[in-house]
Image (spheres, rainbow, N blue to C red):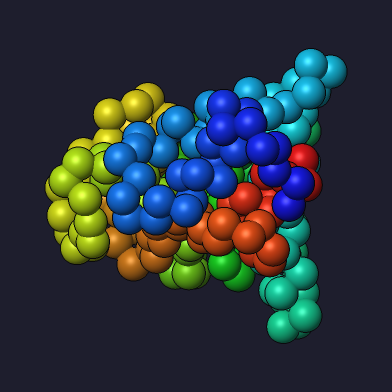
Length: 196
């Protein structure tokens, strides 16, 4: 990874945070802000994020295909996720054997997918975030621990978890966290952000 020697450079701030490990006082949003500041003037954050986030869905889809599954992505431009009638019709046409909900969404869409999974007795995976726990108190946190996040994005994830769990108690809710490695190689936050 190409880090600047300037300690105030955003990527240098990221490196410093990762080197601190458990001593990093947080909040995690500071790391995202550092990444945003590291983008060139001609790079729009939303466009940079669009190159980062699909990598994970693409990797999961590739593993599912390799295991013999047919994978169908939900095109929200063709079928709006928040249009309940269209979404239900789309699910009826697809007739999925399982649902992996990897997107950021409204609680309404998460609930609709969970209701469908339960009604059809199919497995459902919903990806949430380990950020449902605020950095204070520090973890580790039990699965049933109170979710203490404060920002709107993560509160939305908590709403999706709750709606999904009520609609489909058998759904697997997986709270993902970034893997940190200061060297920047491999499958981790620093490496992915640097590639954007």
